[in-house]
Length: 265
Image 1 (tube, rainbow, N blue to C red):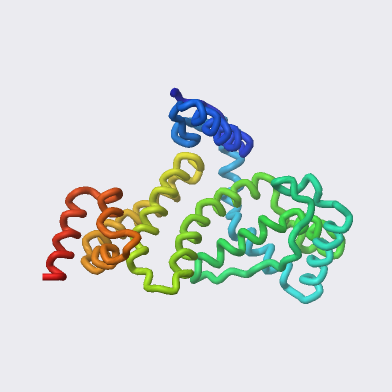
Image 2: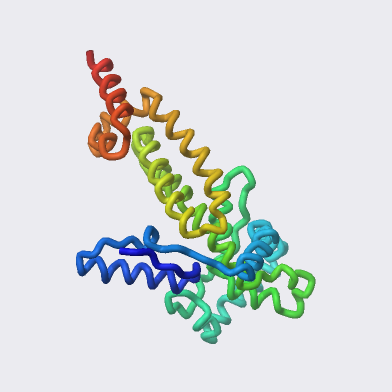
């Protein structure tokens, strides 16, 4: 099957997924990401670059700090959410046909914990319609300039999608009650796969994803050379050597097998 060229609008993402499903039913191999070429005109690219230069994560942080600055502001934002829910004001402004916003508070992040930045962005995106209404109120004229337009939000969603992947991997490892050393490399290699896919779909941020991929690839290569990782994976009944055979090259698998034999001899 050939390539389909289209821009990176969200409705095109949905179209490609549905096309993949339909072609799969007919036994036709097709990948919604692998068979897609994205394009953007110079105006779109310039607009995206401008929004990126505005540092959307920093904008997000400024919004959170300002809206949480006092108890009065925190309570008022909660009231805006609840009033909008009661009046049906959010209808048509939320994804997936939802009509109500969850009554939640904005979250601050910690500069030394990037996962907290993901949670901060996630909460801002969730409550964005209410935040916009809140910032437009007369009493908040001093912070009205913090309002993010649709393109800023689009860029923020792309960043959110990128850092959601390592966040999910970290949550998976942190949720285990048993030692997680054996799951570390599989989790990182899954992260490598997901980021590689995103590099092709969110091509505007491909350079930044590439930096992360380089560091991750180096870490994984070093991990495969570390005996304790291999032994931990081999004794894990859900992994053993079978997982390595499916995901590693022959030299790495052979070395892991030799380490296992040395350990029991």
